[in-house]
Image 1: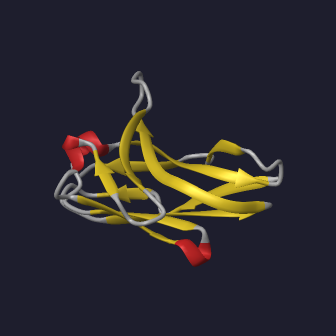
Image 2: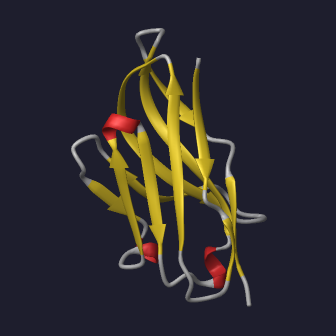
Length: 120
């Protein structure tokens, strides 16, 4: 069994910062791409940022220059540093990871989601 556990969401004022964390645990043999997605009310889930095992990153245009994704391969953990937050960043943020697991196949895993609310 594999689990992704997110933490770090909350309520902050516009212009503030948050740091999200997501730790993968369980029968993990290897992790490829890890990333963050968000889903606002009434909208589809969309990409925020991804990072490969070797550190190559990709960002949605809306967060470039404000958000930074990073990972600690030894801890099977991915982070999202969110700065200069805007009300439109309000959403549930989901962690995603492509994991080679106990079944010896690559599988897509999702966290349970963490709420991020930007409001004055």
